[in-house]
Image (cartoon, rainbow, N blue to C red; front, side, top):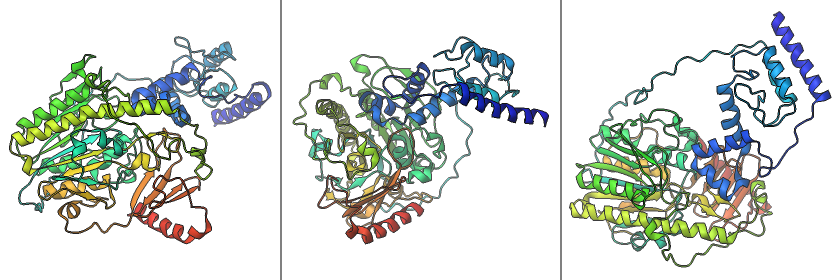
Length: 582
């Protein structure tokens, strides 16, 4: 009790002294006053999430710096030194106060074995004194020896599901191709796929959207058939919430499918752990951290192969060849999840495509939107983008798609040569789209079509291909594949697309859910509903958006605040709540 009273008195005294004698920190801009510790945090964030580096390069105004500092600066610091412990002896005492006094008012004071900058803001000041005082007399546990990492985390085995009968005459093979950050219109720039839009056996879904326009949430949804708020994977830092024991791969594998993953799995799937093979995958050849050069690929055998900087190391070609080899030899029925890094940042086309002609580069009328007075605050705060830089990056993305297109054609040819193309369903989609200045936005995550209108094509060998305009979502992929294979997913949020592919009916759907509930991007969290005629969005700060999809396809005129739409907004609000609660 005596110690607790002393700590309370010391805390009160520290606040008084701080207000009397110590200057308050002055807010500074991101560009010119980042401390070394903050820069280190930003580097750690970039190393952990490739999307952060893209924002640093092209749209630093969209970085959520507070979250990044909390996640990669303060939390990292606390893991290495206890708060108030300046000398690393695992206790907070007068020795730490003396060290604080020694460095008081100094910037970037961290020295070997001494760090009195307890909040890592690059300055030793009264804030650090308060941190020391409130932790005075605290003892921290001393570290123990690092436990030996296991090859595979301990997991609860998935119960074997009872297969249901496939609606097809036999259990077809399934190839799922997931590209990265590929824009919808880029299909027209792909020589092979661009000639298959709604022709032959290829079905083009013209109104396909993702639930969350970001890599890890989208891929978790694709593999589970669940909304992001049901998987728990709301951003690129939440992979560990994904249920690796119960998803599409485990269901298919348990029912007799040979399952293979080649390419990108989930962001931060290792995250300090020893690489492992997740449950459900017979073949697993995944990027440790994806890139185009200087990357590693982990195999289910435990082997890690390093690749360098030669033309033959270009990762789209490497994983493409692995996919072709898989298709040449795998026993039927099989499920291949092929996920190259293309067309994600950094924008590096294959050497043979560095100067490829991809035709005219154009942007729609929402590019560098002049009047954003009707847009949410986060959009109003965005600067105009450099048109030449946006065009340069989009051109590079189109060129990157050429190598992906070549490998899709080679996979198609491999299936044809094996005489199994007629009993193989190929699904090709992007995990999310990508903005290049539409509504002044760069990258993804946003509520606009430039972020969440995705490409989706399905080669369905049992009926002629066509364009399908029904509203569909990446949440529908897992239940579609499950029905094709004759397995059952529990509690799926999506709907099987087989009625649309077979031409036997519709989905009974009146709207799609889009949302952003994560961190790391300077975009206000939102929930939204897309209907055939309307898109309605509610942001957590109370702002709203309503767009007429028929008469305003580029989302230039937000009519949410016009009184004549009040009744419609109430109706859409109720529908949105229904989707969130389903």
